[in-house]
Image (cartoon, rainbow, N blue to C red):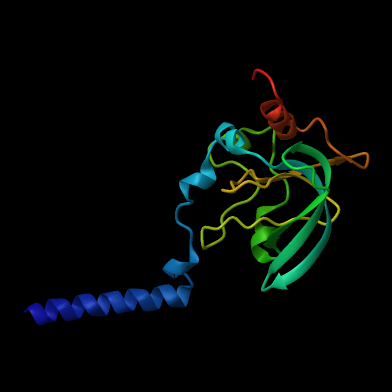
Length: 180
């Protein structure tokens, strides 16, 4: 009797595994729950922020399978060392994962300000992999751990980054010296 129960459980388990593989829903392909640190509040993230800038993407070079190295030129330093440029690794801008997410998070909308809000989502391995558009501007918080708000697109208005962006104004106010 035990052999029959064990055999039928093993057969069911093997059948389920084959079905999952056939449907492409293997366990290694999904990030079921983002790490808590990636979902921290804006207040907590900015309390630890030491290197923050508004910067424009000036180049993008492939360095691996669907991975690019983006070079930025700093337009406005909000915190940290007075460097003129920096690089960030991320997804190719035309990758399927990046194109599924869109470019802009609504900095005025409630979803952005809610827990876990932001432009960048987790890839299937639960890693945040940003992507960028050549010539566009971003508010970049270079301090790790990265959150979904670490690489926010800032719209371009009349050839300049939008100084009235709600996220940018919030970050500037939180990082400025003096009472908050």
